[in-house]
Length: 281
Image (cartoon, rainbow, N blue to C red; front, side, top):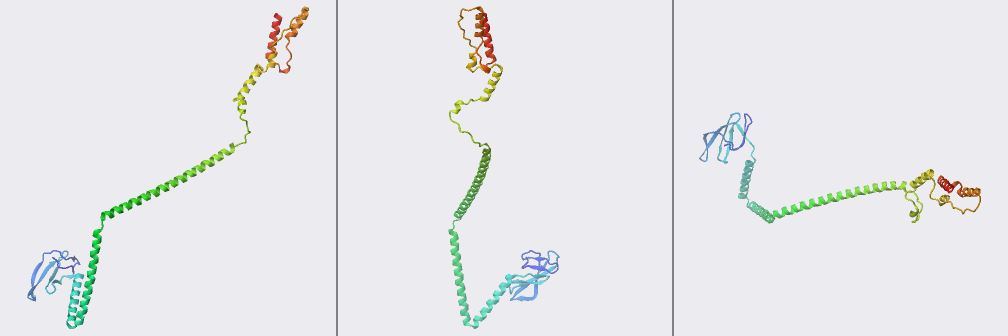
């Protein structure tokens, strides 16, 4: 397996750490570290099949790139190397300066106290979170959502009611205006009538007038008593007289009294019939 990230110098292919290869191993001649041998490995690029070599580094417990590729940047390795370097410098200063040892100890104690305080805060925070009832929180949130929805529905209903009332008021105003316009031309001053006038009025005066006029034109008036009075002839007792006087009396009796211009054809017909009856007698 590849011990680190590398890039091929021939084709530029990236080879990541942990990639498996069929490698060839050999022991490096004349290179030993504290009696430990150093090994060299040969692999080939997965793209261009160029040969890449690297060897072990027991001094740093790592591997070193040798040929065919370049090792990519590794921040973790540099950080570890920097920590090792600072540790060595500190140990060297403490060996020659006892006051520096005291300062470093105070700094370490302060750092430990800060770490303990932070740890205690984290523990308290974890305890607070452990006491939280998530079901109650979810239930409260659902209730809040339902209350908000109910409020929105009530607001919508109020708006709809207000709109409907406004439309109804407009319709009532339009209807009242139209009624007033229709009532204006029909309003005329009417004569004051008495309650008893209804008894004297005929329900159909025009029809009755037309019928009476047509009857009067054809036959004559029958409603007046003065016209019918001419139809009755009062007989007088015959005094003893000459025949000529009797005929004259009959003729005089047979003539009805003059009624003027108001006599009708029916009255003349009745007078003529009476005269014939008297002659026959």
